[in-house]
Length: 247
Ligand SMILES: Nc1ncnc2c1ncn2[C@@H]1O[C@H](COP(=O)(O)OP(=O)(O)O)[C@@H](O)[C@H]1O
Ligand SMILES: [Mg+2]
Image (cartoon, rainbow, N blue to C red; front, side):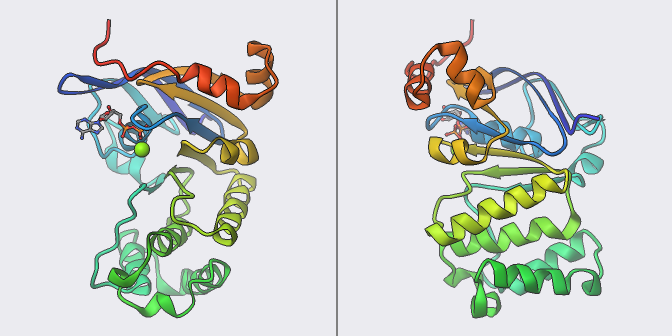
């Protein structure tokens, strides 16, 4: 069964088509990286899948569940990490984790040990008991990343995962992504960082001005364009400026 199926997805904000006509199918155990410059439509695509934005047209299925017909059931299968991680200021990291566990109705004894291990792995240390208002962007992101392991989602959506992380934390995050992939999870990661895509992606997509220009492996990308340098192809596929209307 496909983890994610997207058919003819379109999203319009007043006069801007942020997503023009997106078709995509993702399998269990794959890391899909959506690459594109700022304003390409990556965040909008993730928010549509997460059910945080209404789609203008098209269909989205998570494990064959139509997100329009059964939004709550679909959401229970998704973990979403936004590009601007949000934790209530007056909650500590630990309280935030307990709060989320409560929403998913997971008993403390079933996650406490797992979370302690993750706090260690991410080197969150004593910060876990500080108010999140004192956290850096990277610290918030690490705490929110731990939350993914609470309800064990099949589809994990992550927007710009490396922003604000030091090299050691980004290595831990990469390991964590591979771990999830090896457990059969599907990861959908948006980034404008090409080198990250090269390291981690099973398949990549390149989006520009709301249009998917390419889907395939990095090898396929080099092959079809006849070039060796991925950077060059990426720049070529994304060189047009953001268009304002759809034909
Ligand atoms: N809430 C919004 N209202 C109006 N326009 C938006 C909104 N969110 C995004 N856009 C526009 O949609 C396009 C795609 O944005 P976004 O999905 O954030 O791109 P990316 O994540 O690839 O940088 C941009 O032109 C952006 O200005
Ligand atoms: Mg974005």
